[in-house]
Length: 482
Image (cartoon, rainbow, N blue to C red; front, side, top):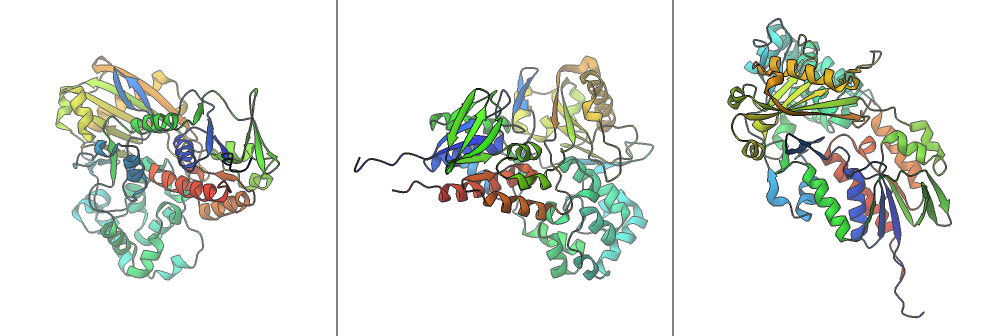
């Protein structure tokens, strides 16, 4: 009929984690009719919440990196800018090895990048790695940079070891990287987890000078932020926004297959069959590659292995002695820290004032993380797969040791264990090349896009920026033609 409005284009987003929700919102804003298929019973993936002792607490991510405007921009669009909160400025502690855990704990150096110090001679660094370690690290200022630049691909561990030595790597960098990425520095691609670092080394002549310059250029203030009520409120705001936009949100609906159907796609999900002009696959890496086997079979060569398993044990305790914040906002744990099994502890009520206000004096929220990413050739760490009661017992022992304050079962008001298996994909050496190959293969199929942490990198900032960029490109390519 002359003058009739064109039929809106449609899109199916497979995966209702945070990346899938962002993708659905951006496509809907461009006028597409969007359906989201989520295999589980809820949305948000690692950006969610759970109830413990009557409190709504983060079940996964509890903050976002402020290095880019990606997350703050999204938060502002959703009307949550007034809820942005900063962590307590006291910072975290570092638990090093030694026969006396109290004596081997210290405040985390604040002037570094991923644990790499900007000034290896600072007092806090001397305390952490000793004078012999400092003497080795100081060679960074005189060693030639060229040998590290001849190699196309390098691990973070290789760079730190070559420039500053084993002490800096094992006692400073490894605890930080283990807490953030659940991975060993020797398997992480330096250009992926610290983009621009090697270029800055060329410009400034050493690793420490490069770190100092990058820190100076970073935005002022805390390196992370969160939302009052927890990061789970971001997922709640996204789902509410999508519902208001008419996006169809389906849980318990795993996609079974994707096929080409004319110029579009046909997606099967149980007894459902959906036709769409565009598809965004926002699952984990292995699931995405398997799902796209019939559409982009060449992706099989780049199928990633599962990420490390992580278990988060949350304890809500009645322990007034913790009001003193004995270890600041939490503790990052070196591998040789005695019998401690946790890789990190977050003292959530010390870190976030809104949470402390909601619990009141004497009641504290502690979150301990289990499951270390191991280096090449090492046996898999199965700690995160242990039964809940064993992890609970370990959390009590570790919290007592790390905080130097007894935390007993009788003190616990409520607790929970949340497991994330494969949720933290490692950006292993060669990551950028693999991502480029995946992107190239997907680009050969009109109307298809693949997003998520396995390509964008770990962290809400990276995932948000990448998802929005990819979906803007997709929307532009399939805009309705009048």
